[in-house]
Image (cartoon, rainbow, N blue to C red; front, side, top):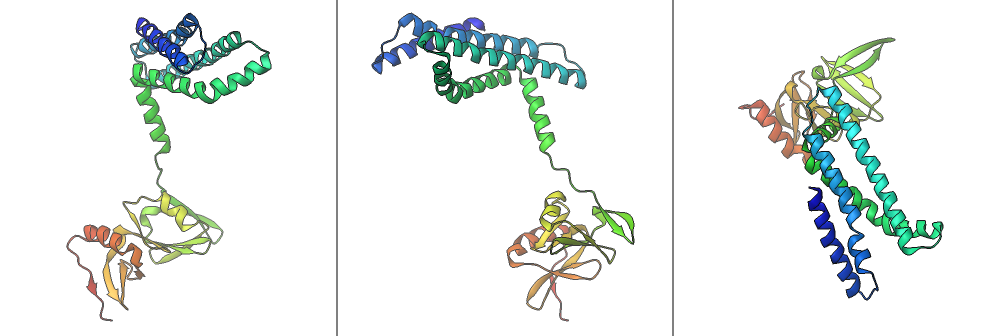
Length: 267
């Protein structure tokens, strides 16, 4: 593995040498060619370390997490030492004061090689240690997964009450508040409708209007009255469907209501 990276480093160095000559720069063959070897030796070392990590003992979840963190810390330390080596080589090659070397290093490495090295290190770890890659992806997705709202805490007559979202029939916007309807009772909560919409399960709650979200499990049917489609809830209350939402509402509710069809209300 290390031999592979070393050989690749020699080829990479030769490419650099002939590129510099083609661009009209004066450069030393040995310095340009062999100057790339440290990069690939270090990459080879990281590859070998990742390979050994992957083939190590499988531990329980807690101990495996500790082992993952220790390994990633070692990789980070090598990465920082590698950047330090690049800076030293850059300074010895081009000379000058420490200040000028730092400025040149920022232009040459921090804004270019830093990200390139970071990319290479990441690819090596992900390729040679796929288990740690999968665990990282799993934890990121788990962290980003939406936790659906389960209940509202409301205050009624100076007493707090917990209302579970599954029992809510309709949620209406009311300026900077929302009204939630449960068993023909209305509760006022200081939240925005948009905030609640993104926190509720889209498989249960459906936005039918810019100011209304309904629980599809408590929908009785669709009715047409006063030249407008309405969603009729189990409580008997009708809520208007906006034109922009009509197609989506029909698609979702027709599946939910199965053979129930929207019938006009002649009242």
